[in-house]
Image (cartoon, rainbow, N blue to C red; front, side, top):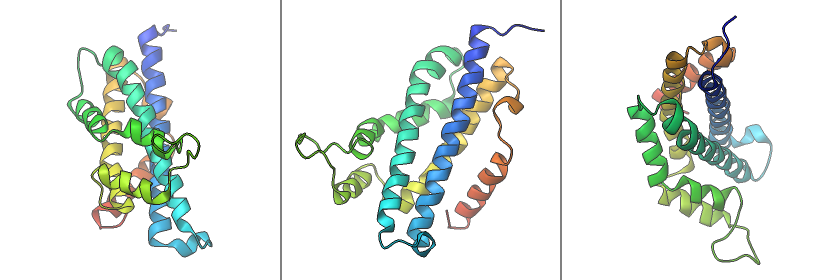
Length: 189
């Protein structure tokens, strides 16, 4: 039996992490989109809180992905064969300041106000617009392209280091991803 190198182990771990983060993003975008388009499903008078949690889930997963890209993928795993798509996504995440956005949305710290740290919902919506999104639904639709890029990066790592798809691919993941793409292409999420 072949012994794995440290890089192969790191590559397998990165593929698994990308799969988990993709799942988190997909789950959050689906729930958030449903809360926006079919709020009665949730049997609550305030589906806006479900949307906020979904936005926070996506943003937190993107922050984790950004760390994975900066500290493992870009500097160790793909340092000699950089992914154009991965570099573009990392650049976009930095440009949109998702790290700071995550701190405000997920940690709920209002800027400069530690006595009343909760960021109001209206401010969170403003921050989302500042990221270049017209609405929460626009943000959720944007994540479809993010998922496709993450999938390409995972495949590139897997191919380079011989990580078998069965080690990181979850049953049904492709069905869900293909359905999400089809629904987005039809104007839905």
